[in-house]
Each structure stands twice: as C-alpha cells, then as structure tokens.
Length: 265
Image 1 (cartoon, rainbow, N blue to C red):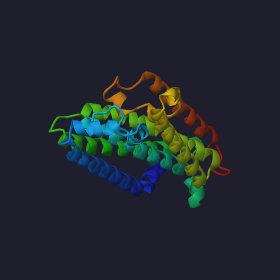
Image 2 (image 1 turned 180 degrees about the vertical axis):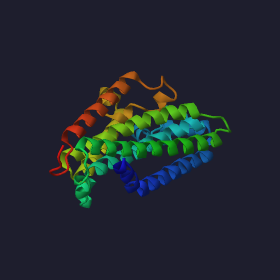
Image 3 (image 1 turned 135 degrees about the vertical axis):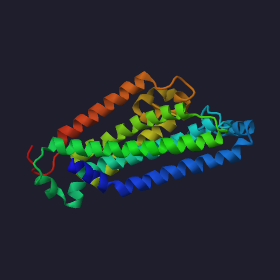
Image 4 (image 1 turned 120 degrees about the vertical axis):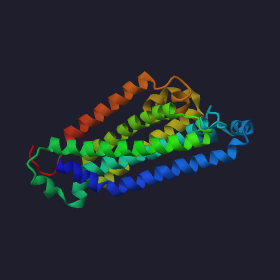
C-alpha cells in the first residue's frame, strides 16, 4: 500500500498538469463552436467542400458541426490522442523509472515480491487514468451543455469517454509491457509513442482511402469514433473484444518480463 501512495505522489504534479491541459482543450475547443454555430449549415457545406484528406485530419467525417454534440465529436478525436499520450507515457515511466531515478534500492529492501510491486504500480496508474477521465467528463459535460442551450448530452459523453478509457488502458499497458522488457524509460517512451502515432496516422489514412478499411482492426483509434458511438450503434462488440485481447496480452507481457535488477521473486 505504501508503494501505491508513493506512486500517486510521484505522479501528482504530472497528473495536475495533464488535467489542466484537458480542461483548457475542452473549454478552448468548444468556445470555437460559438463562432461557427451561427453559420449553421453553411459551415457543414464548407467542410464537405474540403479535400477528403483535410476532413480526415480535422476529424469532421459525417458529423454535423452545426450542433454542439457533432462539434464535440470532432474535438473528441484530439481528446483521445491526448488521453492516449498521457496513458502511454505514464505506463512507460511508472514501471521503469526506478532505473532512471536510481531508487531501485527502495524496492529491494521491501519484503514484497516483484508481482506485488508491479501490481501496486499498475493500480496507481489506473487511478491516474481514472482521475484524468473524471476531469474530462465533468469539463466536457459542463461545457457542451452550456453550448447546447442547457440540453444535456451526459449519456453520449459518458459513452464516448468509456471508449476513451478503454483506449487509454490499451496504451497504458502497451507502455508498461515495453518498459518491462527494456527497463529503459527513454526507450520505452519513444517506442510506445511511435506506435501510438503510427496507429493514429493509420486511422487518418483509412478515413482518406476506404479501400483499406479492413485495416481499422489494427488501430484502436478506429474503435471508439464519435460518429459510431454517439450517432451510430454505440460501442462495437468486436472492437470491445479486440481491446480486451490487447489489454490482456500487454498485461501478460508486463507481469512476465517485469524485473528490477536482481530483485528476488
């Protein structure tokens, strides 16, 4: 338990900064809706006239940006990226930072196994991600309701953020798996971030070229799109199963490879 609180304290400042960042992103992003909402349908027509590649990068797709919900759907793409980056960096550092900070001796003198060490670290990471999501939900629900003339979209936003939470878990445990294999924070962070950006770029390419739509199963950023979750059929069962599979595999690798120098099991 002491290790759990130690990890929470160690990541406290970083979490506060990320939460401030997500607050500013939601508030700043939705504030622009006030400027485009008066344009209404003309803004949708302008977006439709743009090249498909630009539409994909901006995340417009088939969303109606004349509504607060549709506009938030565009913003949600970037909230997902921000949340995934936070989770990936957290996972890669929380596991291997003992080597970086030269605090491995702290763990070596503790009468606990390496499995307990990694378990408490993962629980602390999950709490960080959960707090990040709670802040995102409260800020999103409040701001969207304000720009939606007081009409609540809490249910839709909660469903979206449930998808984002699952996405974060995928990249969190990807980061811990890579860190457990390397025990090098810089290498783990670089590799996990490269994979994250690669899958994000793949999701954009898929939007541009429908002929490679079958590749959507390889990028988690296609699993929880706003157009599907809010205005489609909700969370897709196939994508949920794939997400659970990725999470299980990354967790298995994390526990299998985690080590702290010559620490006894």
